[in-house]
Structures are given as structure tokens and as C-alpha cells.
Amino acid sequence: MKSVHQYPIWVRLSGRRVVVAGGGTVAERKIKRLRSVGADIIVVSPTLTPGLKSLARLGKIDWVRRAYRKGDLSDAVLSFAATDDPDVNRQIAREAAEGRVWVNVATDPSISTFHLPALFSRGEIQVAISTGGKSPALAAQLKDKLSSAIDPAHGVFSELLGEVRSYLKDSGKDQKTRAELLRTLVSRGESDLLGLIREALLLPAAKRDWKMVDDHVRRVIGDFGFSCAESLAAVVPKRGKKRRGEESNREEEDDVEEG
Image (cartoon, rainbow, N blue to C red):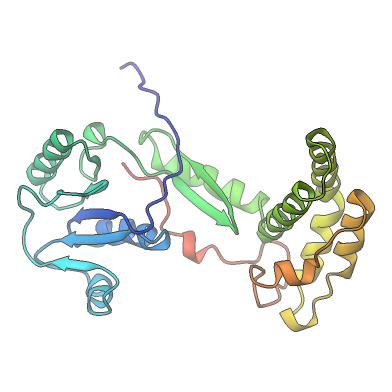
């Protein structure tokens, strides 16, 4: 069978209507990721898992307590057919196509218009791996390998680079000079800055001293108008880590590739 290439994109779903048909464990996994990006989630299902019931009671999701009906995808930008009935899921896929709504079909990836990759995050860094739905097991294995290589310090480093980039934009330096400084900071960061950040992460937040990071950045770009300690305080994990890579992947453990 000829492979159909898929176009990878990142989509902003904050405040946008997403319909999930089904209230089982598969639906719960999908809803978990949707909640993390602020989607407006409507769940259509006669029953829910205990976890989803709790979310409904707290007003975190809207629960339509019945089986799926034609028209339930109205105004949705994204939909998930996650019932335990393949015929109902196919019906949802047909209606999604008619209404030009993107749909993910749990029981038949071949009629989905999008798939969910295996995913892990380090701060604002997100890494997604997809096999086009052909081998979720392989995607999970690759995710595990990459998540070991890209540790929490990379997430902190990314935040720092964002602060430096914003500062350089306002500094009056030309684009070529800014790009060269950032490339130098990234290349040196792999050997120096990441080590300093990892050392800081070993300590409780109250005992961290970012002065060495400040000094290192200053040697590359010159004096700058912000403090690493202040700019990173809001994004760095609060607890110290006992060793590199110890940060748990619990929040990503369900982010496996799905059809």
C-alpha cells in the first residue's frame, strides 16, 4: 500500500470546542492531553470513567449524558470518535467529513484525518514521534530513548535562550550579529550551560544560585538587562533532583502514539 505522508503541525486549541464521543479509558487519555492545552471539551457518552466523572463534577469538561447523535459535532474544530462501537465511530467520521471537522477514530486509524503522536515535554520543548499509526510500540520505544537524552535542563535552557533572544531583539544589534551570538550560546551551552543548570536543579529552589549562568551568558553576549534567577524562577522545577534525568515522566506516560 502506498504511504500517504502527513503534515505535522502544532495547533492552538485554547478555548476552542473539541467533541469527544466516548467516555472510556481511551477517551480519558485523549482528554488528558486536550485539557493541558486549554481546549473547551464536550464529552458525549452515556457513561464516564471515574476520572472523567470527577472532571465533569468540577466543571473541567462538559458532559452530554447520552449516546452520540447526528449534529453533535456542530461548531467543533476537532473531534474524537472513541466509543466502543466501530459502527458509531464510522458514522462520526462520515459526519466529520461532511462538516469539515478534523476527526481521530480510535477503532480505525485509516479513516482518521489526524493521528496523535507519542509525545514528551521539557518545559516549552515538545518532541513528537509518529509512525503514521503503523507501530505505536516503535514510537513509544523511540520516545523513551529521546526522553532520556533530552532532560529537564534542556527545558530550562530553552527558557533562558528565549529571554536572551528577546533582549537581543531590543538591543539594536543587527540580525546577523544576533543570530551569531545565539548560535554561539547554544553551542557553548551544550558543554557548559547545561552542566551549570543541572547542578542548580540538584538543589532546592531556595538554594539555587544562577550567578554562574549569568556570568557565562555575559561572556558570550556582553552585559544584559535581565537576571537569570528572576527570569527562570517561574519555570524551573521547585524541587531539587538527585541525579540527571531523574525528573519523572508521569505527566507524559499516557502520551503514546494512537490512531
